[in-house]
Amino acid sequence: MVLKWDKIETLINCGCVLSLDVATDQMSVHYCPLHAAAPLTLAACKTALYYIDLTGDGVSSAEQNAKVALRAAIAAAEPVSEAKEVK
Ligand SMILES: [Zn+2]
Image 1 (cartoon, rainbow, N blue to C red):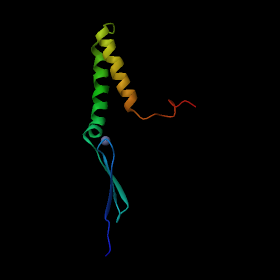
Image 2: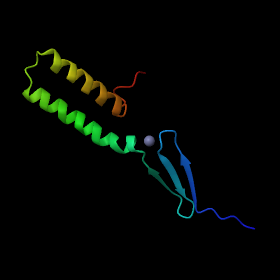
Image 3: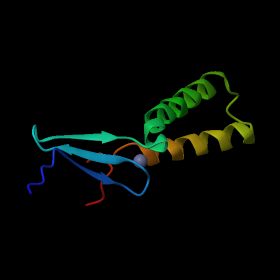
Image 4: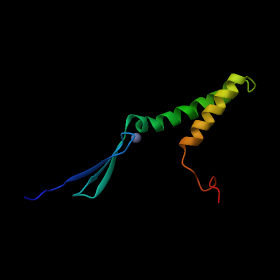
């Protein structure tokens, strides 16, 4: 008996699945709902920050709290650039 594998899949804890097509040696990712939404969430945070900066009064505590939360979410989601790395 010969087993033939055409695909190897690995389930990540979050629900994402890494898949390797053995015939073509191509790797693909099937994103879980959280990671599928992540790029849209990052874009939404940037858009919200832009409009708060554009239309806000710059002094209210609600506005300041929203900006801090949005900046923290954006910083956490963006890849670390060399400029941000501590050497
Ligand atoms: Zn995931």
